Image 1 (cartoon, rainbow, N blue to C red):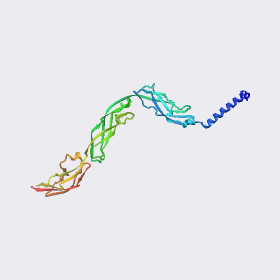
Image 2: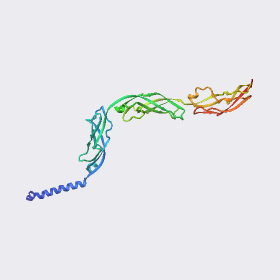
Image 3: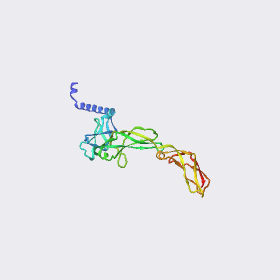
Image 4: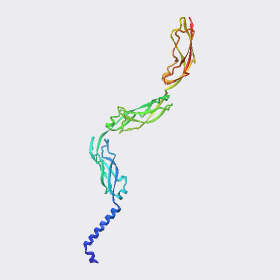
Amino acid sequence: MRKWLGGNWTAKLICFFVAVFLWVFIMNEQNPLVESSYELPVEVTHLNTSLVALDAPQSVHVKLRMQRNTMLQLRESDMKAVLDMTDANIGKNENMMLQLILPPGAEVMEQKPLNFTVNVDEMASKTIQVTAKVTDDPANDHGGAVTAITPNVVTITGPSSLVSQVKTAQTVIHTAGRKADFDIVVAVALYDAQGNKVNGVTLAPENVLVKMKLTPLRVEKTLPLAVQTSGAPASGWRVDAIEIVPRETTLTGEKSQLDALSAWQLPAVSVSGEAGEVIRQVEIPVPSNGTATPETAMVRVILKEE
């Protein structure tokens, strides 16, 4: 037996290689190589704090080959793509490569895209006053006026090329359906000189408190009716008195129009060539976007012989 164990090395080597082959075969059968695709998040590193990458990739598509057991045990934190911006300059940085952090044994079969162009800009900041745009519902009978905005300025931070575009910081206040003074917290939006919204910057604070005072846009008012005559009566006659029934009308309309009125004028009644009395039923004029109640009035012009 000792002699057999000490000799016949050729047979021993054959047995060893057969055993290794069988082990590899069995392992490959039990834990084969498989392929799968992933979207890896991109982490930007070593970028100077005074700079900002405007269009750095958010993710990269890769196809990986690895043993099945390794794939089944993968965690999200085991893989990522790193964009090293140590040598980045202001402006366009072309052909930038990603460093892939992968689990041991993983092989990259495909990566899209392989490289990137990243634009780098300087960080900038400025403060700007907040304004409020009030929109009144045409069907509403109240309008609003801004009495206070708190705070009345916001700070904008971001790429200098975008910060310089911001010309106004504005909120929009809707008064539809409201009839009393109110306070409201609203978001601030940023706009350029042409009125286009500017994105890609941050502002602090994002919301402001706006105090609103409401005033009536439409009112109801009762006014005495008034009328004038036109033309000349028959020879020897003159206007002695004018009677109107009813004597008043109730109007609804815009406050700015009705507030200044002390009487509501009816259309003139012609007395040309008339003698005795003239009786006419006339329509009561309606205020702009308003109503008049009643809709007609009876006018009696009494003529007296001279």
